[in-house]
Amino acid sequence: MNQTLENRFYYLDNFVTVVDSVRARYRHLLNLEEQAFVDGFGNLPQASAALLVRMVMRKGELFRLSKLRYDEIGCATSAAAPLIAAGWVEPRPLLDIGQLFRVLTKVEIAAAFPQLRQVARKSEQLDFLRQAEGGAAGVRSLEQWWPDAADGLLQLCEPVATLCDRLRLMFFGNLYQDWSEFVLSELGIFKYEQVDLSPAAQGFSSRQDIDDYLHLHACRERFLGGEEPHAVVADISAQPYPNPWLEERRGKLLFQVAQHYERNGELAPALRLYAGSSRPGARLRAIRVLERCGQPEAAFALAQQAEQQAESEAEQQQLLRVMPRLRRALGHPKLTPSVAVSIAQHEIALPRPAPGSSVEGELSRHLACADAPALYVENALINSLFGLLFWDAVFAPVPGAFFHPFQSGPADLHSPDFRLRRAPQFDSGFELLRSGGYRQIILHNFRIKENTQSPFVFWGAIDEALLALALDCLPPLHLQKCFERILQDIKSNRSGLPDLIQFWPAEKRYRMIEVKGPGDRLQDNQIRWLDYFARHDIPVAVYYVQWAGESA
Image (cartoon, rainbow, N blue to C red; front, top):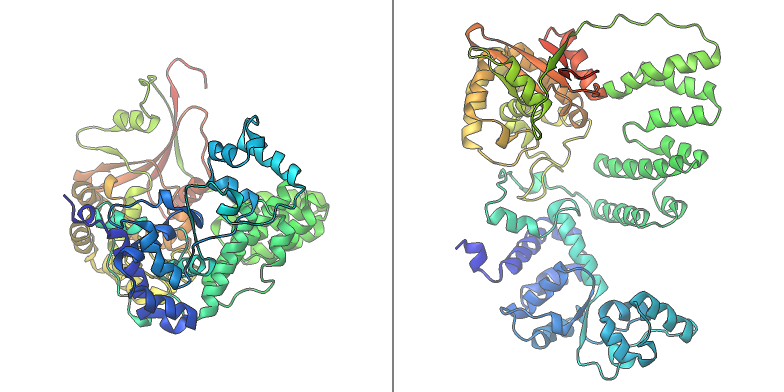
């Protein structure tokens, strides 16, 4: 049996790993109370420490003693005593009526409040009792609410719960990863690149950064929980954060709230928030809101500014659609459109496939022959080649990129300065493309990094035979152009690549093929890739497939 499964205290060991890591790397960012916790935790009896971790890892802060049953811990009451003495667990928490109803079953509620026996649902029971109490029920212990209760309650004290979230953030660098990451790694489900986590590469440089992250996270949770948006926005900093990583999060939250306002027709606050958001796409949304507000002059001025310094190809593409409309609205002369690049397009009729077959699979089988295989690769092949060539660049231990041993990629992957911060490593990779050494590095990394998590490498979709075929047929100049475009906008350009690739190994050539089935059309990110390929003489074609005997 796997050693992780044999170790009944695996979860405690994982928690200790987090505590020890934070204490070693970030002790200077902890206050005195937090230092006392990370120092004192190691002095707890094993059963007490394990009980605390079980409570931390479970949902909520109230726990019935009868449900804290773990063979390796034993008696929860005994294990809780040192935690109570330390002030980390409350043995007789005070509950309001809503909390009481959450910890009791419907049968127990009926026993505690006989007058509610005939009421059908817990929600109706709660409403009835609140009306009967006149809203003056207050807070009481479980024993005071129900003297005959045969169970006890423990409450994880709020400072401890908050601190554990802070520790998790300092270790993982985010709050969406949780304690299960350890188990997935130790069971061999996920394999991660080992990155230098020395003090020089640590993610947090100040306590304020951590406080700001937690504050933004709380604001986001309030917004997603349905709180009035204006109340949430009032608590979000009006000034950009100097930390780019935090500013990205602030910009995203403002963008999400602005979208909420826009969907509800509240255009003035939407426009204000779009203007204050640094998130890509916010400027374009602001242009469209100005149009809806009947302010075409302001929309046109902002669009002209965007044309002069577009933030991305996606924005450029959208401006090509917006500007003609604004010019018409303002009576400006129509501009002569630029000549579109030519892309090979084919219409083809194929027999309708059996249920479960894809249009891509049908076309690949139709086009393939013994000396020219056609393979379904979509985003997998080019991204994997990129990830394998630039493995050392992607996993370079630059400050703020890696926080812990369970990261599939750097935290700043989508930052505008991602490439700049790793310029020497990326320059080395591009030099290998020019010198011819790229093939050896790609195949070497494929072998030694097999199944290691990466934001670019699709391990299940590639094998050494496919890589060798691609490296034989794709000129290094074409790879260079593809890789440069990925680096221009990693978030957008990792997707949208053509569905198929066809190789002619004897001639060392290839073509990429985008497939569109009946009723399907090209998406914006696909159009951008196709245009890029055509402008750089990279062979590509679009096939529009219809089923034989059926009208288009």
